[in-house]
Amino acid sequence: MSVEHAVLARLDRVRKSYGKVEALAGVELKVRGGQMLALLGPNGAGKSTAIGLLLGLDHADAGAVSLFGQSPHALQARRRIGVMLQSAGIPETLKVSELLELTRSYYPQPRSVADCVALAGLDGLLGRRYGQLSGGQQRRVQFALALCGRPDLLFLDEPTTGLDIEARQTLWRAIRELVAQGCGVLLTTHYLEEAEALADRVVVLNRGRVIAEGSVDQIRNHLAQRRIRCVSALTPEQIGMWPHVRTAQRVADRIEIVADSAEAVVRRLLAEDAGLSELEVQRAGLADAFIELTREAA
Ligand SMILES: Nc1ncnc2c1ncn2[C@@H]1O[C@H](COP(=O)(O)OP(=O)(O)OP(=O)(O)O)[C@@H](O)[C@H]1O
Image 1 (cartoon, rainbow, N blue to C red):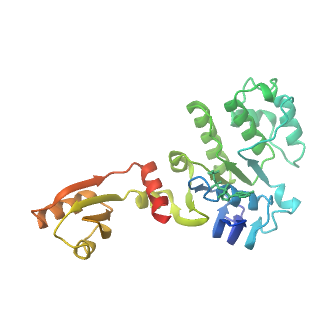
Image 2 (cartoon, rainbow, N blue to C red):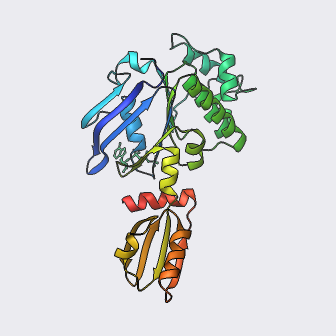
Image 3 (cartoon, protein in one colour):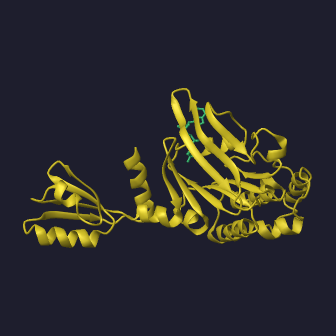
């Protein structure tokens, strides 16, 4: 099987607890070559824990963790990955060119410095000391260090935090190019538009559990639900049978409906109940809907 679309990294029913906190409660995850998997979830969902296990920084309590079919602790496997974490720990006194040379020297077939500069947008930065760069420039250097070893698999933990729009676009272009070349990417982000722009597949984690998984379109459809509230003589059981209605329940004096299409359901509500009142429709944006989704799961 070619590297493209082969499973490069995998969590199989993985559990990990820190004291009483269950950071991962039986998570399944596959990252394939030539694909980007976006791992989404609110703070504390378990995203960094999942990445840490795949990088061999920690051990799972149960389940299997594999990197290129091997243990993530195997040097052979680790040599094929590139990593950009939230905390970088890069020596501040070294120049960008020195950092690149040093990191490239760890790998058997590194990218040329010119390629790294072009991909990460490092023009004019090679002679500068790392510690004297702006936060966004440091982020770009971290990205260059992650890709300079020509990895088959890239881990990007919130890579665009602190980047301006132009730098973010540069990074997105570079990521797309790497994926087109067959690289697998595991991205964590709080920016839904980033996942939409880049990801082939999305996994949503909440409190250590996968609560939604699929293509970007599938997740978007899932998140595109509308919440309708009203006071009505109709019963939740009746409404629950209608097309486009996912759930209908009574909450205090209201009926609360979750629907795929608000318009069709509202039209029917008004047609079937002349006394309907207190009608309210929440049309969540993607970000709001995502929060809603994770809140529902909680
Ligand atoms: N080393 C640790 N010791 C104790 N608790 C930890 C440790 N690492 C993570 N946790 C806990 O495990 C849970 C998952 O944390 P994790 O960092 O994986 O979440 P996350 O999804 O990456 O969050 P964020 O979006 O804030 O980065 C949290 O409740 C966190 O407090």
